[in-house]
Length: 451
Image 1: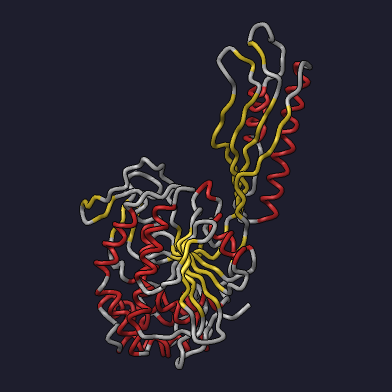
Image 2 (image 1 turned 120 degrees about the vertical axis):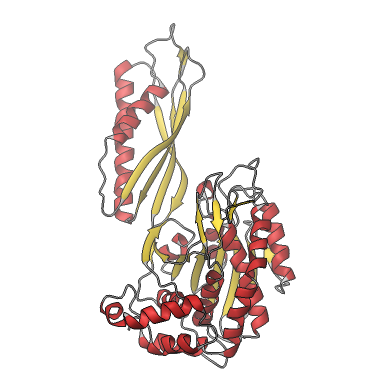
């Protein structure tokens, strides 16, 4: 069954079923036959029944209303967080602020770990699962970037306002929601503001989380905005600095000597001629080049940075092997062309994001689908991308990445913007999802299994 009639009936009659939810409920009931014929995520009836019991709890309904009422403060906090610069490897100032926010919200033993992650644990009542919900502290922007928020045409403009200013703020709103609800969960919830999600960060924060906490049973990353899709697949990537080294010399008097830049050029040409499958999607690009000393020198060194990605681990491995093969050929050709000196090449790994996925039959995905439905924003797409969820997915630990509600655009650009249209639905959905996964003491068992 796609949506339990119990769930639909509850949201049709509940005081939480406001205008947006009523509209959805009516549409869902009218089109239930077609929905059940081709569901995007078929949900097990037993899960839907437990979720309905949680949703009908009066404390839950009251807290959902509180989340909506407090959305102006959530947006104000989003602005405050966004205006604290946090480039990769320079997230400390924002991390210290975030730690203070966790502690002021009652997680007094929250701390910053050795990698720079901010961690706060809300303990459950018993022998339940350990669930992690995270958002990343870092942005792609240099330290000198102007990150002051400007309001124009009902939109908030600032670098990082959506990615991941929204996710970080939703986590704090969720801590407030649990505090005000009076609900005791069965499982433990670990709130994490993590470092190193963007670019050169190479997911270092989440790698450290799963290195240091091997007992995690499930993971959700809130990254950006929106509430129509979830990431259930992990695009893998391998990134290298490909370094060429030779003797170097004067462009005129030493002419005939091998050149590191010429060897690099040969290699880039060969890589550019490689063919990769469109399905599973596999890509490559040489994104940066550098080298040489002057216009009148034969280069003693050169380097290019290479990004390779695929949704399939096997294809990614084959592409890497082929790139190394044609690069070795390029070096051999340069050495043979001049037969004077020798170029060597070294592949230095600078990024490694593993492939993985979480199936639609997993309770984590199904509970998320129920929570999306409950707030009137059914999941429209299951996508594959590169997010913090790559790490747990690759380890076989259930994980997804979701949005924090509202709308945004211009990510990774100075004109990034965020629009708070129905933005309260993001934390409402996340709150319902979390309760379903970790269970509510005296009401429901955890739907997320211990590993």
